[in-house]
Length: 171
Image 1 (cartoon, rainbow, N blue to C red):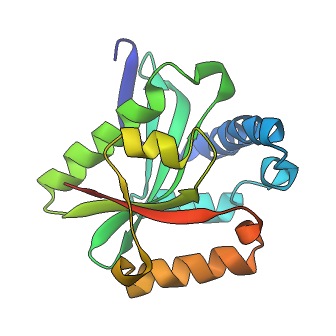
Image 2 (cartoon, one colour):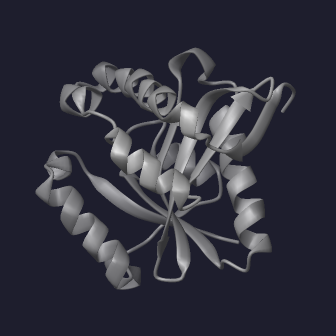
Image 3 (spheres, rainbow, N blue to C red):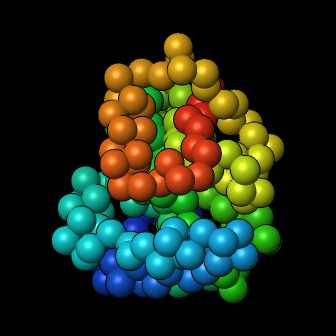
């Protein structure tokens, strides 16, 4: 992807990442999911901890300004894409897909067997999008303990008002 570079997030960018997530969340208003659109991004302290642990990856235009980011967590021997957000001004240009590919290449090289994520089943830029990116929906019998814990946390947060699924992409 021309003009976009993938790298670890920098300490000076934590607030920019929060802005990216707020911008990306606006799309949910078109699906009557205002509660999702209004959800606040992770607090700065959480982003700092994730950054220090090497768990934040960004897509930066011209190598500098982040326009997308991913939160990557270890879950049951895989890497869980906890969050993937693309600023609305950079959406629908392949930035999110390219960031996912960057993550997949890096994690495969590190010996990680798969990427996992949880997402909304019927939102076009969620489960259908991830299916086009090589993820498959897991049935209940395939859920690992860590994925079950994530789903329980999401349900407690009220996200089950809309159908959600766990997905996996083999690396």
